[in-house]
Structures are given as structure tokens and as C-alpha cells.
Amino acid sequence: MKLAGIAIVFLVLGYGLSMLITPAELGLSSAEPETGAELTIDPTEASALNQIIASDGLPIPSDSLGVSAASTSIESASGPNPPNNETSSVPEGYLTEADFLLKPGEQRPFGFRVGFAASRSEIEQVKAKLPPNLETHLARFFKANGQTSVVLLAGVYLDRDTAILAQRQYQPLLDVFLQVVSLPLCIVEGSEDEEGLLCGVQADPAAVENAKQ
Image: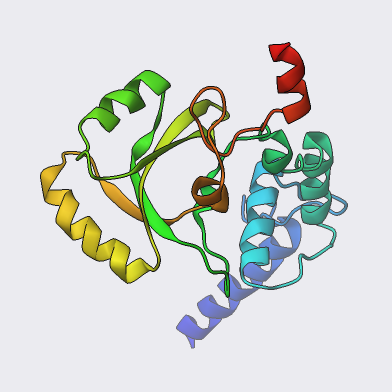
């Protein structure tokens, strides 16, 4: 009975202390955010989050976290992507990589693209090392970085298989790579200009005759 009485006394004292002392005073309050506090997200993190969501094919959310707003503000600040003006910036009379691609159903002869496009003097040095029985063609070339140069082409073959067989014949004799490509029609049917290059802008015959007079 004495132990039961002591237990009842301590129970009453504990209950009384709990009524007098709050959990905040003991440092036991929960770390919940205050009412009205806003959660902010760094704009860089928001943009990265939107990209991950878009890559998964999901719609970008628009909620109180401001993810979409941050991404939109970044895009509007940087402005829209500039249009691709590569095609319009190519000078007239210059070939590009696209001119060596054969479209579906298109019939064109094949040949070799000898090495890489370079300056006229460098191309002439490469040309001098080619076998004399290999027909060569020079044309102006516009690189993807915006530089103008000259490309060396060789051979004219009716189909790709014939061009590949000829490549196997000539490649062991050369230290420069021969790439089988479809030749633009201006290489096969065109004529050289005053600089000895194909696919260039042809001068007006009347103007040439007037200049000779």
C-alpha cells in the first residue's frame, strides 16, 4: 500500500508539472514552418526540373512552387532561339555537305571526295599526288563554320558499287582518304569558271564578249 501511495503522488506531480510547463520551454516543439511562409526554388533548379519533366513526356506543372514561372522568366530573359540561317548564308556557287547527299529516288553518278576541304594551294598539293588516270574536279566549298574553301573530287562512276570497287583499287596507293559520295550534277555536267573551279557562278556570255571587245 505504501508503494501504491508513492506512485499516486508522483503521477499527480507529473500531471501538475505538465500543465505548468509548455513543450516550447523544454525545447521539444516541432520544426514546422510558420503559417504564410513561402517556399522558393532557385531559378536554375527550376529550369533543370522542367527539362527533366519535359524529357519524360509529362506536362510541366504550374503550381504554388513557381516552377513554371521561374522557367518562363528565364526563357523570356534569354529570348527565343535564333533561326537557322545556314542555308541563306551560303554564298552562291559554293557546295555544302548537303550537296553530296543522295535524295530518295534521285539518280546521280558517284565519285570520290578526296580528303577534306582546304585552301586552293593545299588542294593542289593533294591533287598532284593522285594517279594521272584518275579524273579530278575542283569546286568551291562552304564549311559549317562559315569558312570558304575548295574541295577535291575524283572519278565519275555510274553506281555506288562500281565506285566502291574503284576505291579499293586506288586507296592502297594513297595516304589520303577516298570517300565515296554522290556527285552534284554541276560537277558532271558543268563547266569550269575562269579560276578552274566547277559549280561556280557562270558569267554572262554577252558580258564576256563585251569585255573582249
